[in-house]
Amino acid sequence: MNSVIIPNNWKPRPYQLPFFIYFAGGGKRAVLEWSRRHGKDDACLHLTAIELLHRVGTYWYMLPQYGQARKAIWDAVDAHSGVRRIDWAFPKEIRKSTNESEMKIVFRNGSVWQVCGSDNYDALVGSNPAGIVFSEYALSDPNSWDYLKPILEENNGWAVFNSTVRGQNHFTELAHFAKDAPDWFFSNVKASESGVFTKEQLEKIKNDYIRQRGPELGLGLFLQEYENDENAFISTFNSVFGRGAGEKMRQNPPANMPSVARVAGIDLARFGGDNNVIFIADRLADGSLAEVRVEAWAGTDAVFTQGKIAEVLFSCNVQQAAMDGDGVGGPIIDNVRALCCGRGIVFEEYHNTATAGAYANRTTQGYFDLAREANAGKVFLRDERVISELGARMYEFNQKGQVILQQKKEWRKESGKSPDFADAAVMASMIQPLPKDFYAKGGRPAFARTEYDVI
Image 1 (cartoon, rainbow, N blue to C red):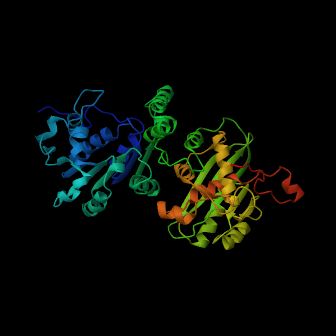
Image 2: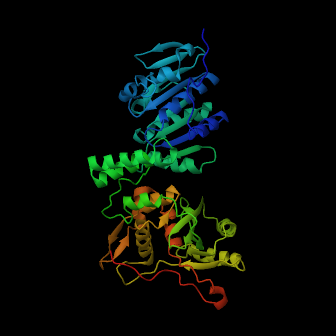
Image 3: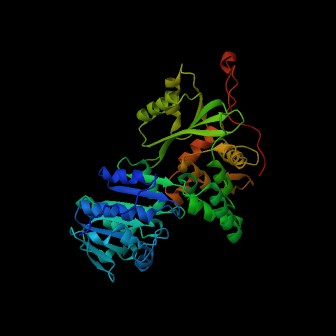
């Protein structure tokens, strides 16, 4: 019998390698948020080939629907090699039998691999899988994972969830969870960062989308399929941030531009499911705002929270900070201010007071100011949670005809969470840098800007 090396004539790309290293170290849960043409299924097939040889067991490859499994995986031919995908990942030398009608392979060591669909997961009762790949999980039935998770927990099995983004749904919720979970692997690979496409190729792909589908739908498709933008198809009719702003905020800040102030916005958790968020950014000499760090943690323990805030501000050399003083913020602000005493940090208490102008309150003003900066190419962000929440922030009009942000209780009803990351970023953006001689004069900072444009 001829010998083969697994993976079979295949090497992971640089951005795929950490995924394999994680499993080589005994990892059990992974989320791959990779854009189109980035080898999600190829990587998962070759990983499964490795795993089923290491541990004898049953392995499933689960597509959203059973009816699409044959075309997408079983019969699919790799465009580059011209080889059937399953023959490439699972060479015939390691197989005992292949069942074409059931899309099942039995291997010489006793392992079994089978293609199935999330639409009939309950028909798999009685099986005991050692590993499952949920391919294009954003389009799959989320109940399939709820049903199968206890089986994998019991037998120490593994699960991989791969998908391109399809708006905000169960896949993006899982991705957000995996990003912060210490025992999960998470990878977000965008076409603009991976090196799979050149900058010129991506520009052509985007322009082709726009020519074929129009400026709104075309750009939305490109951002979703190639840049993993979960807010690509949120309506821009009453969104504070349009899709164009989101694209610009992901660009890199100008090189060698000095900072005139390092600022931080701090949003506190009011409920058990909320996050405490510290958004730190540099206000640069040209007026632009560049993200430095985002720190977030869950929980409402006041003693831990105030110590954590002070620690992060000190370690990041923050010069000016603002914290939401509405709700639970008051006592924590006093204690953090005391901890910051003598450290050179100007600490301000922020309140969302009403205004008499075009905007109903200061927070609404801050959101629209930041949106205008973003549209002007003056905001540079890296944290996808910040970009996602800013992009989803909607507005309406009150009885006075003023612009006001969508109420948080409505946001919670739709998303199940609070816009903590966006609020912290907006607070930071509203801080006006102090003059260099501020301390010498003993003055107090002019916190928020006062010049606002009408919509």
